[in-house]
Image 1 (cartoon, rainbow, N blue to C red):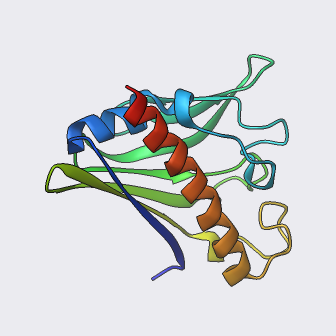
Image 2: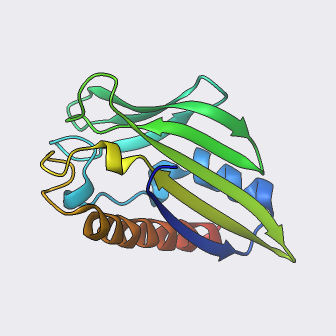
Length: 157
């Protein structure tokens, strides 16, 4: 089993609505973070090309597109999984993102699991020289901020 960052949040929405907001509205709630930028030029505007085999794509300000990941599981209202890479990764190098949506009463628990960072060397620019535990702590903080933005967008709808 690979090392993982796991962050959860409960939102006031059905699992299907929570999934839709996570995927089709990612460009509205995603917040770039310089420490975890997808490319040296930032994150740009993110969008999913839905379905298994679909993509998560970042459109950069200059119009170029960067493929962040390829969707391996697309189950609306249940689960989304994809490969995840940054532009500085070597060919074939990636991490994995797994997002689950679980009904809890009138709410949905959304759980993000981002794993595979132990396969990225500590001296890689994406890890900033951080030991794995410190890197995971910082990445978890980033995902908490992202999910806070996601929840605010979902609540405003």
